[in-house]
Length: 199
Image (tube, rainbow, N blue to C red; front, side):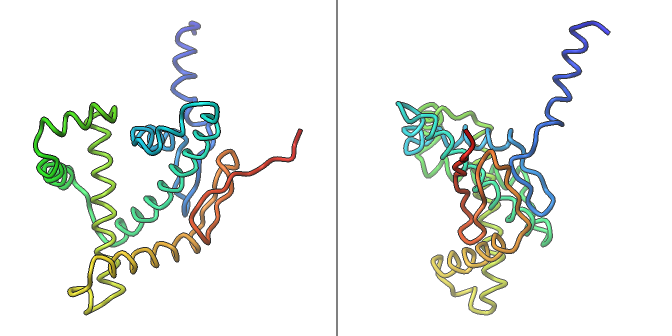
């Protein structure tokens, strides 16, 4: 086997030997998933500032923990969606994206926003997909928890019902976080930095 062929084979296998960032009820969240989420968060001005300057390394670690916590919540929501037949198709994402573009003032304004935030269209679609998924799951959970009162419930009441449900799931799900990222707190759903005492 040539050196080039061996290198290509190793490159294709490498991802299989990298520990996942987290495992949620048996489902893995890869370190690549965290990097993709981190790249999305880094386009938001309030987070981007933390990635520059003398504290950039610490800022990146903090943001990676936030990204992983968000992915864990997304995985919990996805589990619910799968169990209850809630699907998010490309047409759902396209429709939501069209509404967002209209609210922004049209395609030109949308393109300016993408450029200003350094987002690709695929990244924007992924953000919209996450929002649509959470919206559908939130509505379904609220309907389940509020019962007949769900139809007249305010957005705040639905949010509260969903947040209470999510807190319960985070507290009772089997969630294991790679120590590289920190320690998962099931009471808050946050990931805390682990301060090693090793030299």
